[in-house]
Image (cartoon, rainbow, N blue to C red; front, side, top):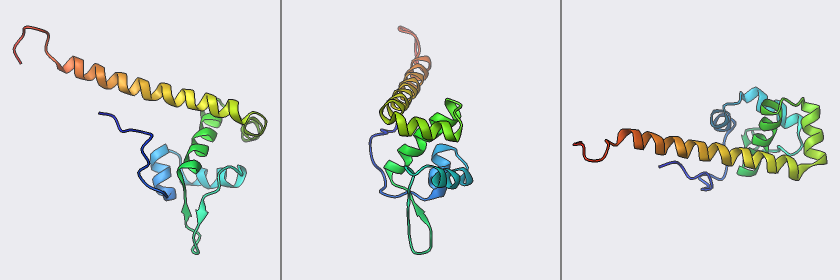
Length: 121
């Protein structure tokens, strides 16, 4: 069974956890934090970043615009500023389709592992 993406597991995530989760280098996350005001993790007294689920969603959106849509940083900023609903809507549709694809792959793998009707296990 696939992990439910709507379930909140933690309130805050470290930069390392976010980097591994989204497969984005930590340096890129720090750079995007400077470039996009929408990405603003809380920092403690030592300067350690604590990302919320909302921050992670914004990072996913920036990643979608920059990596998948091949927009420049300036283009992604403009898209997020001018059409935030359109940019977010497109990103959400892509994420849902990816989740559906993974679920279908899991179903196919289970079907392939099941022997045909009437044959012994």
